[in-house]
Amino acid sequence: MKGMVVMMRNFTYYAPTKVVFGRGAEAEAGRLVREQGAKKVLLHYGGGSAKRSGLLSRVAASLAAEGVECVELGGVVPNPRLSLVYKGIELCRAEGVDFILAVGGGSVIDSAKAIGYGVACGGDVWDFYARRRKAEGCLPIGTVLTIAAAGSEMSSSSVITNEDGWIKRGYNTDFCRLRFAILNPELTMTLPAYQTACGCVDILMHTMERYFNGGERMELTEAVSEALMRTVMRNARILLSEPDNYEARAEIMWAGSLSHNGLTGCGTDGGDWASHMLEHEVGAIFDVAHGAGLAAIWGSWARYVYRDAPELFERFALRVMNVAPGASAEETALRGIEAMEDFYREMAMPLSLRELGVEPSEEDIVNMAEKCALKGGGAAGVVKRLTAADMAEIFRAAR
Ligand code: NZQ
Ligand code: ZN
Image (cartoon, rainbow, N blue to C red; front, side, top):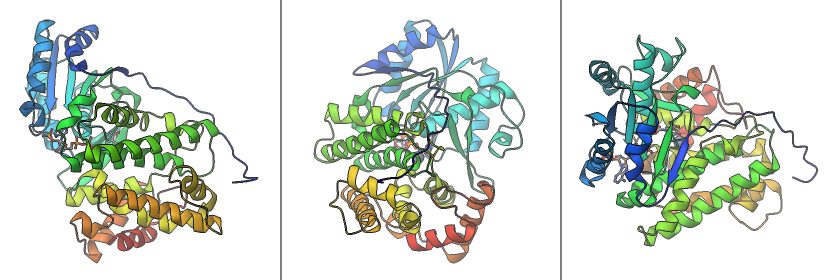
């Protein structure tokens, strides 16, 4: 770190989503939708948690009170599917929907974004995810978020799984950025502990993906990232014994949005993202929870690449994981990686693919690595540029 030359990159920071944060905030849904000039809303939701908790009917009542009509489409699953997106597009066209309200987590929001592209652009929406066409618009979208995790409420991405070949792909544009995000930390109190922990891992990972970058960085960005990661870990530990602690839920929820709205990437080259790319391959085939998949892979990735950026891993170890310095940057770096793995263990998160509950064959590993490299244009990552062979090694180490 001492004497390290830090280059800063020019950047554009664009985070146009209006955030309405706090207890009872979902009561604002109707007013916020009307503020957007919408007349007919698609109320999009997942497998039932929003219905069971009564949230969906509260939101529907808030829309009705503002004279906004709505149609419902539930059934979004984690790793959201293209087939439901097609169904949503048809429904929106048939019903003349002009706004989508996603009540749920990253999967529901991502499905809403895909439907929004499909309605606004026409043609086959998968073309965008397959990089065959570029979107030129998206229906306006808002959310009532129910899980702090993916950060889709403020991100420019949508990640969809095509069941035809089980291909999971992300597509990023500013068109899909949400008009508003209603963040009530109380809504996350019904989450199973496993999903809360998965969410915390994903939030940490969105920050780490940007923190571990190719060398262009900015002091303020790094300091924000470090504080964010420490805050998430401290409050995640509180939630282990006090899942209804509002303050801890609130700290984590806001961290989730800030970790993926670009703030922690300002002045950098955008970050590494190899762990995410590798996890998406696992999620596509084995349908695992995204955060748990990341926990299962990260340690193997970190051990594979840390010697290529020992100072950065050393800084992470000292400032985020608070370990005692070792005899060398590499030794300190390794202590930091171990400390993060210890944290994952404390959260009951898997540290290997086996612990994740999947046992890919050698053929699966080679396939996932090749698909991943292809999606990255031949390679992925910036801390160390990973080829398909490197990726396969990481998958093997993660077994
Ligand atoms: O479907 P329901 O019944 O609502 O259950 C969900 C789901 O099973 C449940 N849940 C959500 N809120 C709840 C609740 N259960 C009880 N009480 C609540 N308040 O939690 C489960 C997970 O929900 P999901 O929406 O899948 O979680 P998450 O927000 O982690 O989203 C994961 C998806 O987002 C993608 C992932 O790859 C994955 O497909 N990502 C999207 C990103 C983006 N658009 O920017 C970035 C991420 O890196 C990520 O790739
Ligand atoms: Zn993620």
